[in-house]
Structure formats: structure tokens, C-alpha cells
Length: 410
Image (cartoon, rainbow, N blue to C red; front, side, top):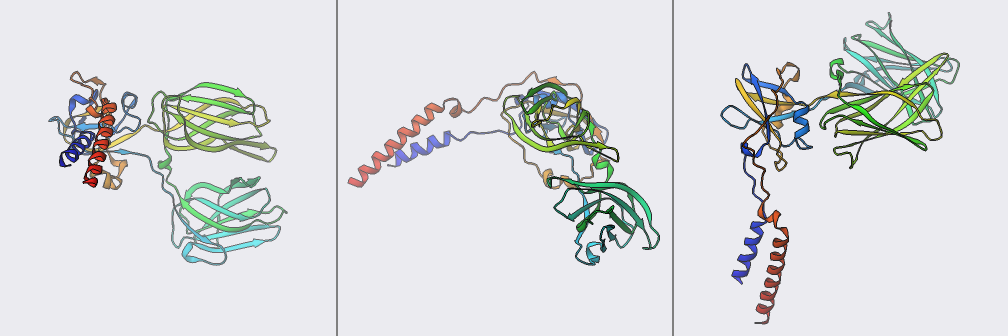
């Protein structure tokens, strides 16, 4: 009985693969970076690195000139919006709502009291109506609630209930009081049920065009399929901008991405439109993504019975990934290209969000070098001979059952 149990335990022990710490011979490529001073740095990844890493970038490693591993953390763009909000059922000073006024067939307005001069450049409105609407709004600022200065004019609208744009973006100001007025223009007044005011720093939206090109446009009945090749996977795509010829259209769009061009994953969905007539012009050609993508992006533009759109160009806006690392003075090595590596777990992940990315020195790696001592990681014996392990386990199970039955009889 004991011998049988010992055999089973031994077989199960063999089935557990063993993984060692960083070994230079297991990584196929490397680049060098040079730091003039020690401390936190950002290292800009490039197309060489993205082309030869795993899809999840888990095989990145950094070592100093003595071969010691240095912890790092992948940096991803963030965009936080700070705002105050409140129900408009009455005065709510804690939420920043001073008053809410509705004049039937004339206008509705809401006033925010920020209590002190506060930066703001964005307002969200919720209105009480089941009807489509297109209304002009104006935003004003004041320091004393007596003298008001015009800040911005805009329009809000709702079409078929599911296409709604009631966000107002304007140049940043720091008035204590902000008033937004919706003109009724002789129509039914829109009652404001909720409002938010906030500020989004412009620099947090400073994305750049990414490499990529349209590789294929396919026209089918009721839909257009557009495929984009970014060249490599791993780019953080904030949004896609579609340049469309013509006007007065509105289309739903679904977006997918792929690492190999065969298997596709959901990415996002949105709507593009362009309304234009004598007294109105509104256009939306951006599709939000906000995700690291595979090499290929595919869009399904649903035309229904309308003619296909003429796509003039598509631009991918986003960032090339960076990593955060505490570097010593001198040359360090960035390693990549190990399909068997696992994601490292460093302490840096717990507090990297506290590091101010804007002040980090940015380093660009050298040209790619092939590791001449590279030896592919050999899979564990049990993985290479899985059939033998399964057979051994089956035999062990039969033996154990036989031993148990015999013991029960005795």
C-alpha cells in the first residue's frame, strides 16, 4: 500500500514544471539603455521590441551591467476627470448647484457655485424629455453673481433617444460661478434634471498619430469592413479618427482587434455621424478605443440600406508603451523574446502610480542585438511526453484501486 502511494506521489511531482529565475541564455534579443544619473526613468519601447515580445509583453526583463535583474512596471496612459455633481431638485451647495431655473418656452438654466475660483472646462447635462431635440446653449462665468461674461456657445442634441450629446467642452476658466443656459427658441423648455461640472487637463489627451495603414476595404450588402495593419502589436490606441467624404450620415460601427489576423477579439463600438444644414453643423468621426491592441484592427460599418461611405483616411491616435524602472548610472540591458517566460511580480507594481510620469527622464533603447548565447527554453519532460504521463497516472489509479479492494476484502 505504501509503495503504491509513493509511486503516485512521485508521478504527480514529475508533472509540476519547474521555472528558474532570469537566465540570459533564455532571451533571444536585447537592447541597451544608458542612464546619466541614477533614479526612476521611463524607457520608450519601439517596433523592434513590440514585434518580438509576447502578446502580453510578459517577457520583458532589465538587467544592470553586472547581470542583476532590475524591477520594472509597464506604464499605461490614464485620463482622470474630477468633477462635482448634484441633484437639481433644489439648492445643493455641497454639490455645487446654486440654482435651477426653468422659464416655459423661453429657457432653462443652472448655476454652479464652486465656492472659490476653480479651474473648469467641461459640463454634462441631463434633461427630462422623450423627444428629439437640438438646442443652443451658452456658458457664462461670474465672480459676484452680478456681472456675467460669455465663455462659450454650443449646441446639445438627442436623436432617437440612443444618440445623445449633452456634454459641453469650453476653454478652461477659473470663475467661482458658472451658468449654463439652454435656449427654448419658442419650443418646449428642456428641464435640467442633473448637471456636472469638471476639468480635464489638456495634456492628458495629448496623443500622437501611430504607425499604421488601411490594408483592405471590403464592401458587402449592408456593411463595410475596414482592416488596419499597425505593423506590430502592443500600441495603446486611444481612438480612431475616420475622415469621411460627404455629409448627413449616421452609422453604427463595431471594432475588433487581432494579433495574427485570424482570431479576433471585441474592442469597442461607437457611432460616427455628420449633420449639416443651413443653421447647424455637427460631426463625430472619432471611435474610442483606450486599450492596447493587437497588430490588426477591423471595423464593421453598418450601412443598412444607405450607400457605403467614402473613407478618405483613418488615423490611429495613441501612445507607444513605456516602462518605468529605477536605473543605476551607466549601461543597462533590456531583454525580450522568450515565449516560455512568465509575468514577473515586482514590488514596484504596488507604488508605481505614485511616481510623477511627467518629470521622468525618457530613454530610447539602442539598436537591436541578437543574443548569440540564446538557447530556447526546453519544455519540461512531462509536457514533451504528456501521453506517457497520462498513461502512468491511469496505471497508478488502477493499481491503487486494486490495492484498496484487496485491503477491504482482507
